Length: 397
Image 1 (tube, rainbow, N blue to C red):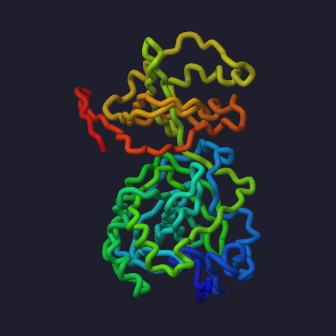
Image 2 (image 1 turned 135 degrees about the vertical axis):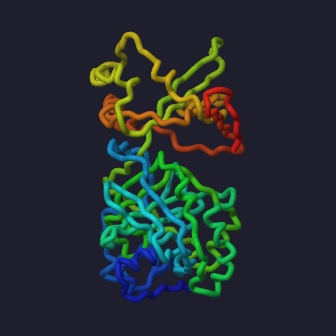
Image 3 (image 1 turned 90 degrees about the vertical axis):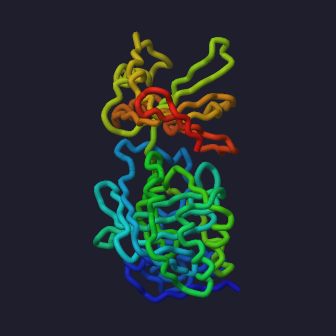
């Protein structure tokens, strides 16, 4: 029989602590008559679950994704603080007793209040549902606005974040909450800030409140199968699968923060390929692009345009102190393998106008032209670092 969860009416501040709702007055579950398809009928305060037009989670489909020229690297600063491990009945979470840090989005500051896990993942990325998803829930000081940072997981090495309390998860089967002492979020601070997706959606549990700012990090984390088992163990059977089904995008755009330049090389016999990749963030104009940006306007009506002498000195000046190397493939069909990739560690900048010009000649379906991430399949990525621009030191992570 499906178990139903009962809650008393609480405030929006408690919403952040409980992960879901500002008004938990009625039952809900993940299956049966109280499951997601019926959430909107369980209470008037849950109406958005059925009638909302900006619901979460969603699939990150490239046709719905566009580069936002205004997005910047994520400004976040999480701090070690005392925390409590909590069985929320429908998921396992960590609640913070003091200041746990904050994130700044569009000039507005959001403070971290709690985090929790769903399994499998709620958002679908790169064409697949992943093994788990972490939500870091933030509130503005006036507790009127919510921002959630989502981290997708695949099975692999243990997650150091979960390792801090995994022994306590065994005890949580008999307790509602357990103090875990100082909880260090440095692992999240270290997560990549370069690629992420952003859209406006909702809470993924009743009352499905809309207006939530979602930031989904592009880099996958790993957790072990044992850690995933431990996160599920305290939950009743009907909540071990606690992911809401995907919702309609309804014309919303998902914004991405990222850009990349590929310099493609061939050996003289044209049998071997090497690509040097340069990553960009929005900022000052790129002098490399400035050499031809006026021609980009004309390219909308032409297939190719002569630009005269092109000076690559800007690339010669790019930092050679840190770079990554691995053997992969072309990122477009025929996806030929054996390509030697070198990714420079130093970001370049381009202006929002330059990014707009680079996209302008392309048809809509190619304005987002990044292939989804591929499996590493045991390959090693080597990092080269030479602090004084002399001999490189190779480090294999």
